Length: 202
Image (cartoon, rainbow, N blue to C red):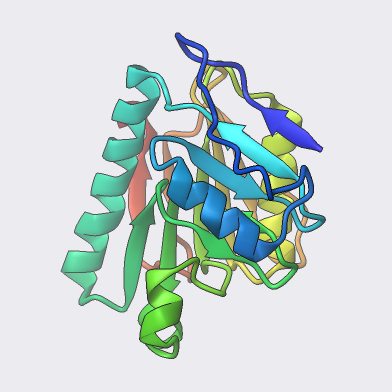
């Protein structure tokens, strides 16, 4: 299965090496990503390919504001972990290759990786993940992604929907919280002291 998100403003051509099938291995996925650096790819646990065109400018601006609050918190609290943007890929324990819009990994877990693992698709699930819904995104696939992150070891996840001013909060072993027009979000015990004022995101 190949899922291609609707283009924002133009048709995007994918350079598809002839030796790569529709269901691809992790090695083939890495080769495809290297051949198409202008696109964002994800790979499902069953080998399906998801191709996402560049985000619209409004979503990109929201993404960078989200990143600002996370990086500022990291600098202020002493650097117990590292932040990653949407161009970073992770190989989850279930075999999927995912790229959250924003992620945080505890420093101890990151430093346990080899240099080669850090330079490729890091073989771990981030401790904290954020997915930001754009106007072209369907809600159900994003909800499934958040569930997948939690099932693979994430300790906290936010799905932020600016269009409807809603946030879904995901935690291991708990029901998903759906918040309507929340004023702020807390990093809870995963990122203690992190506060995201949502008026800056809506």
